[in-house]
Length: 401
Ligand code: 4LM
Image (cartoon, rainbow, N blue to C red; front, side, top):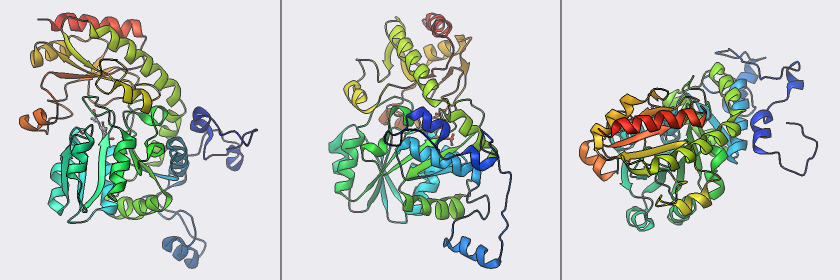
């Protein structure tokens, strides 16, 4: 990326638009080309051998990387403040490729007690088949982490804010505690995005993303990313991606992500403004028992969220009086908002975690993990706030029963 003033670091959107790409090297093409290749030819057998052994850089086969993906990876590393990144085919692909690169039978992982449903399934069920033990603790309580950590703990894993109930976890505090016990820290930054919080700057060792969400921003692809140290990313590419998951991102989806990320800052500003306005409006509605949004003073970790995040994101969870039935009435009554899982799209999406994204938790697990039957989740979109709040407020009126 060329820029006139070499002393001042380029701003977030400047890097989101330019980092890792120079049109002059590509016939002046403003957008990075899409390299639709499965395989790459070598000048000689010696060159092929050197590429396979890692002695010289260069492309081999698109399961390991391609030039469009490389631009995306350089951009992601810059935005998260990491040395390197690996882009993969889904958020689940990112979490599994990272952990499969480093864990082995006998290792332990400590995970927060609230995780996206499929992450919870991978941690609680999937890894246990391979002799890796996962302990779920409340990471908002430092004593709980201290009590659970052992010499076998390799990783501490958490989302912040958590999906779906918006708990906020102290990245600095957890990282210090984990490092004191030689464990490494992975933060799923899907809800935060690098625009709102950069966990590596707070001491985390790895960031993972479902890029399906805000980074894409348009609900038109499934993708994931891992960001961390350069040596670790080499291991993730050659073990987690190449050998263990094969979760390769397509060149075309890499291109769409590069396009989406150009407007990440603009979109996040709007998501945050609308979500805060909506959270404030619905907090006083008579059918609403609680609103979980880290930008509300009533949120239990409000002051931590103010320190750790530059704004509070586009996700709101709410509890309605009348529980599950009220939630169903609310979701069936929305007109502009869409009844759908996923998040971070231009369209506002409402869903019911207990029966949808978190349906693989048992009833008892849901209770322990704070995912009540009455919890409703809103991914606040980019529509005009007047239209959106009119829709949500009329649906809340109908939820009253
Ligand atoms: C959802 N979430 O919540 P892929 N990490 C977090 C997530 O929210 C998700 C993933 C990873 C939802 C999907 C249906 C915090 C997904 C997994 O779907 O594999 O890109 O990401 O609605």
